Image 1: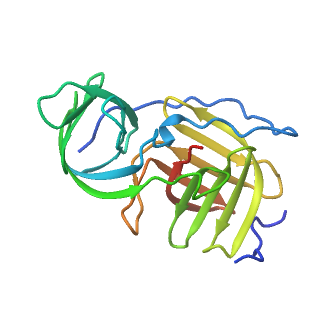
Image 2 (image 1 turned 180 degrees about the vertical axis):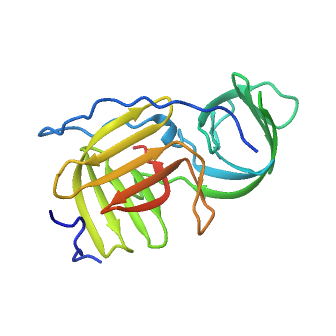
Length: 236
């Protein structure tokens, strides 16, 4: 069995839980199209993500809506929500069922049946665009050592770059789990001689070096080693 990614020439508690439902593995066929990823992995038209430090101790991520009627996307350590605008005397308020998010400036309050969080804006990051990453539908990345996983937008292929780009290979993949509601995707290699597994979950994720916010947690397993990081869906 050959080793994956030979050297390349080019160099507390919040909110609600969710259950994931696995699907049958999807075979790769000639001319196969890339799967449609869950919408909660994307910014939903927002230009930036914001991370929030909350009390009791917890980190949240939001995608700022564009316009007064646009929804707000909210990610916690336990899941993702799409909240719609609600009437409020001052600031901005968004709701989905028993979950609400109110903010004014750099302050926010999140209320759920399980309690109340008082939050302060921490770090903002511009959302990745297709112009910045041509042909990429989803980008996951991590540190120590630096790695990236880029899903092609038009076919079931992923480019894996490990060890700061010194090992790189583009491989086919197949889907073994896809839960749109929970925002969970599991991909495995489409080649028996180059195994890997890529797990994507819609959860608040902060880069462990920069603190930048992302809407997905990503775990890549290659040759028995695990690489953990954050990721974002990139819309056309």
